[in-house]
Image 1: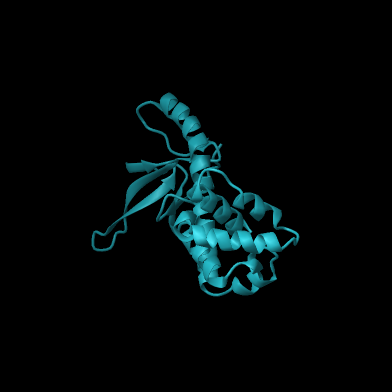
Image 2: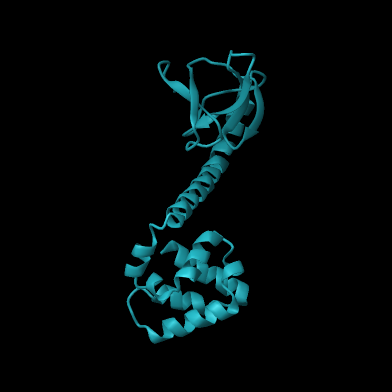
Length: 191
């Protein structure tokens, strides 16, 4: 159960990585204006010049229901259990998106080029191609044209270094150029 001395984080966005605005004490009530996953949005009165800010609090945290509807707590408990399963998936997706964005920023700052040069697979790639793949996120088919895939196929066929098996398998992917680009881009991005 939720300990009376604990507080609930109030954040700008509906995820744990978002900026903390304030916290609410045990027993707080909110009038939700929206819901996303396991988070509730409500208006926070800042008290200065009648300013209002829309903020988010978790309704369910690690399976523990923090806020319940006053009308039907049993229904809320069942909904919370179902939402917890969905939320864990949503939170995992959001965390993965945040991680990818942090990596893309790190790479854009020029910190990844040295590491790529030391990696057996990434060192085979032209720096411009590698930068395009990282910037593309999940849209590898937009930057890995048939020509680029063909050049990569030629480079990997000449090299027998360790760690190239996954890339060589991805280059053999079925389903056309788009599927092959996605498979190759995924392997490269994970490295």
